[in-house]
Image (cartoon, rainbow, N blue to C red; front, side, top):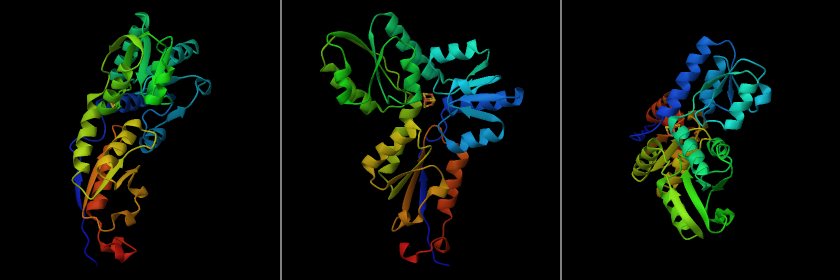
Length: 292
Ligand code: SF4
């Protein structure tokens, strides 16, 4: 047997946040109590977890029209008031698993709107959390990067919030750019999630110290993608994988230390399996011995 051992370090803060943990707990409890449970969009952005809940009976649908009757779960990213109203009109039983920080963001956007501000959210236009916020106020302008500043009306009163999982660096950079735009008033409320920030900080710290960095989590998960982006800036050998099966062992060529982190929607078992397998790899696991 050829000798090979990778030293594996796990980020101090990684994996499930309290918002996701709560959504899973609510889903599991509801599945025990009700016969038919639907989720409007994936309950969290993690395929493995969604598949596990599907085995317990959770049906994930994209559109309200696909729900004939029964109970519907509102996922951690929330839903727009218009969607909630449609669910009520259909007589569906609604169970809300929206994260409290996402709810706070929605309330702030609605409040800005009532106060007469042009509501601006810094975030990803197609992300469900941002789409739900767009539905909470009359006219919400989504700003992803500096090129979107042209969407702003001249001389407006701007009420600015941020998608919860953006990085403080991006939020700060965009506020700087907004500050140089033509506005009459600028009101900003910090809606970033501290849980997401802690994961970003410990991932970057670890990424600087290891030969190769793995970021585990769903490909649609905004906070996981952000972790990967940030780690890639400090470690070019950064890989975003959904689970152990996706690892190409050739990536480990010449590497002695690995870092592992995971998005806020990545279950513990995915992280544990990855770390265990990476730690216990030996020469026999490599078809190509030149990698050792
Ligand atoms: S990352 Fe933060 S905002 Fe998003 S679900 Fe988790 S706790 Fe809530």
